[in-house]
Length: 473
Image 1 (cartoon, rainbow, N blue to C red):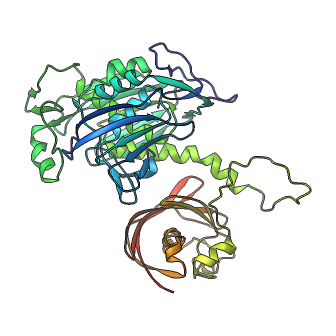
Image 2: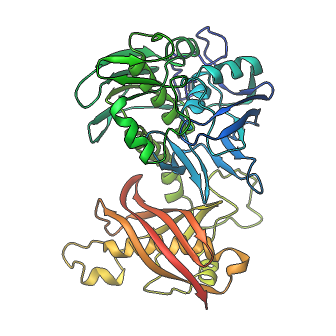
Image 3: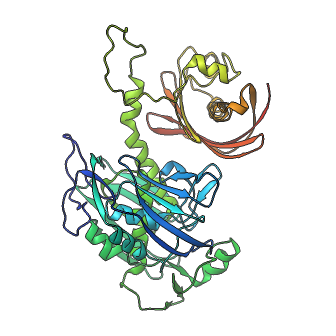
């Protein structure tokens, strides 16, 4: 996402955000002027798919809509919805999935489009020629219009680094959005470097035409894992030894690294906000791109978490009440009294104090960790630390609330069945405010699965995937 910051405290980025190729600073959100459609084949699924870009109102963001499924469910293009990063980026919400979203998202980010609906009648957008050219033509045909709402940009103030396998990707303070990238395979073949300051012009000219590629020896693995069912030399470049197999000459001497940069733009678009920073990547991958986006997202959320932590615990008397807007309040919030009507747990085993927000299959809740917690008497007297298993229990209870809140499950009990991928990263001590975030990933009959994360001051302290069963109370 490439448009600059708005608001009196923000300094404008040196990034052009209007649809024209001029480097014009635009402080407003943008959407498409009119709908536009395109049909093709999904790269990994091989399915025939019809795709339509639709205008969307301000502050609605980018959303994928599966019109082939009952109820036309939507999946928001947010980093919290990333469920898989194997050779592409997959978004999920419950059982609804959309694969290979990065090229579409990179196009919207490149042109500074903040609000749009992407309708498709299969589980993956068409791959086109393996680049983002087809999507660029769609945007050019539909046109881009300014909206009345301003757009907020996140400016990176200190370096952030992610190391994952062979990948090293960092972001440093910068007045605009710049990407410098080095790519190669495990043997160091076709090592390429490229660097560019992003604007709508440089996006369309220097990154969008770069096609996806793979090495010949990877093809058998990809096919065995159910991928590249729609792949061909018409939509991908294949590298075999020192030869490049393609239906046309390479579009750039550094086409491979440019495509890696295209993917970075698309994956970072999942932040939902443009960022100002210099991204330096070595052998980038979707997994590392998305992990960087998660870390930036935690930093972006810190002001909101601070506002929630210091919000006054009382309401003014009716005579003193004034209609002052409160951006922290959410109509889906659940206080402790209502919470105990949903969960059967009681002191000292109620691990959720309040639900802050429920958004579809996602829930945010808090647990205020005080020195009066009974477990601190023995864990440990001179070094009090909240047991990791209780953080796990908090995630399980929060996931149970998502299921039990539904009318058909009223009065039932959620039994904690199992936990996988459990990680405890940092100690939780008295005085900490534990933010519990869960997403319901599967739900079939009485069995539910969820992914949970606990954070303190925006930093992840624990995470896990939990499973539970509903029984009659």
